[in-house]
Image (cartoon, rainbow, N blue to C red):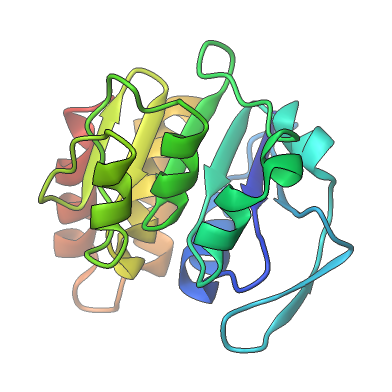
Length: 198
């Protein structure tokens, strides 16, 4: 089972790396998490350079795909050649997007009947793409989930884990990263945000 996290130039480290870390804590046999990019190396919005672990083609074949945000998402969605490589299908994959990643799913036509969450900066562009935007941190319908706000990464990660490895695995992964002295409250809040969408 493969979870791919898409990273483009100018990616947001919080979206990409927090989700990567939480998802990688699940020790289910055969489960792997990869950073996917069209380039061998990709630079974040603050200059952190990551090496791509898999290609976009491999990501499109993954069981689950998470699209984080970045400061160049509008450039990415305007690049027809790049967007044509993204063959994502909610009939066979779990799909998740955070903040401006939601714009990418919208432009791919994957949110045509699904309300979405995004950040306040991206909201007008997602609405221009014809998608209703909710004022909440997380929403999912079927195999498609979106989240809004950088610190909503754990919600997306927990939803992926709950769907792929079970609710207890999601609780455990979130519990590992939750602040000391707040673990019970943090896990409860995270699970409350995703449980009605499981």
